[in-house]
Length: 499
Ligand SMILES: [Zn+2]
Image 1 (cartoon, protein in one colour):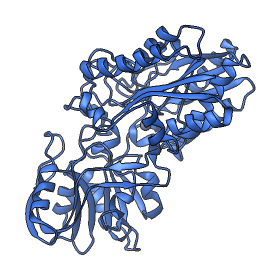
Image 2 (cartoon, helix red, strand yellow; image 1 turned 45 degrees about the horizontal axis):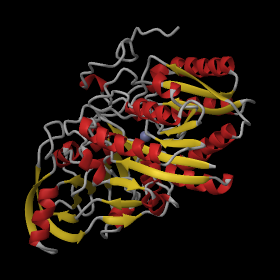
Image 3 (cartoon, rainbow, N blue to C red; image 1 turned 180 degrees about the vertical axis):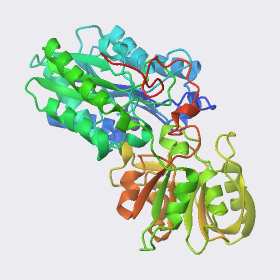
């Protein structure tokens, strides 16, 4: 059995001013053919799961093309045209296929296509035809559409947030694909879009109402004849019609059962809608809570929700740093954070390790993420910003590259890691270890993320405070001016009904 594997993986924050062009992919992760195996054969990402499944179910996996870049602004028409044409051309030239595994995110938006993932699946279907099974894997932050459903035989999305189950879901998707090819199952799927969104701060799946929703998903998964169940949490920073929560149930040939189960899940989530909205503390309250925390030798970790790099944040917000300065957070190892700041990295490299330096750091991208802040300190260390994280991280990333990076110790007792590649976030503590910083020794650690840093920082944190900070990924949804989302949608229209 010959199975093609391909994908254009992007989570698009349409509120970000910087568009995602061809080079954003080319300079991040743009793999063809055997490069995909070199990078992913042992990765914890979806493609790693495809490779494991190929061994387990004994099929020939033929990786064609995979393009991925960190969550950034709308994908340009030029980027999408060039990447999709190359990918679809490879699919056409290397066929015929017994099946296709499509590694998409489900939150992609291009200048031309508000539903990039639907368009990719449509083009794949056009090439392979209705009789060749196509199974698509998605991120949990997917905004699922009818177009995606119509152009695939089955969709399987991650079920944990942080995303630690990419490999398992890829194996599940491959299992459905192989059984479909062999005629053992006949997947049918039903999608229900719920007129609500889940606030980013309520999206972790291990506690609270989101855990209850995922428990419901597990109940449906246990039922006979159910092949897969997805809760699309939705990606709220994409201003598109399909933005919001959805449920997708895949059954073996029973459309009515799939519909009934998807409706049940949708109704249960709808009943929890009020508990799934933003209730996070302000920047001021978050810093004061962290400063008043008992000194038990463990850091208080503050999530900078407004600069959630995993959601399209600019990685250079200074709102929390400014507030920490205002409230007088100082003293040895009082604060640790990272900032995307290429020009200051160059200044520090020119000055050299051990040099005293005064800089204005951060807030270099736009006016949503604070003001540059003057700091005086010493350049402690310089690295190339590359490292490997052997443990599972959010999304299964293994090789990291923050570009040339500098550790700066300030006279206030803060340590600021300045880096030159945007778009990764604080998903791995190796980011700090690799430059000689021990995050567990700090009183307060600011992480640029909402959920994705949890897997790395929960083990060392005395407490995690999720701060309602301003920015392009703010939890305060009223700070965004949507033009294309569907109406009504809870909580924007509080009187929304769901029949
Ligand atoms: Zn995600």
